[in-house]
Amino acid sequence: QVQLVESGGGLVQPGGSLRLSCAASGSFYGIWNMAWYRQAPGKQREMVAAQASAGTVQVADSVKGRFAISRDTAKNTVYLQMDNVQSEDAGIYYCNADISTSFLDHGTDFWGKGTLVTVSS
Image (cartoon, rainbow, N blue to C red; front, side, top):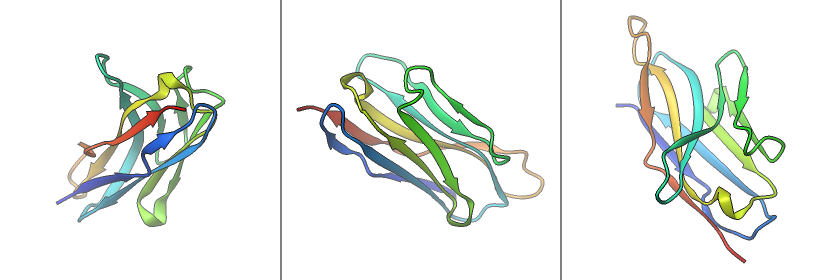
């Protein structure tokens, strides 16, 4: 069974930094896109950053220049480096991955349970 487990959330001061991690575990054939989404209270879930297996990166305009996504393919892990964090960055951050569980599977969307980021001085 495939699982995505996030870690690294917590309390950060405005202007501070935080690094989120998400590790995929279980039995699978391949991991394609990996991404970070977030959801603030009362708002819809939005994509923050995504990285394809080939390396192509997408970053939301709201975090461009402040957040960076990276992957360690050997560890099946994706990271989100968050710098100069602002109050509007607070919310639950979810890991998302497109994973094939066999060579016949074109890919299935998996989600982690989320990790909370709180921004406060």
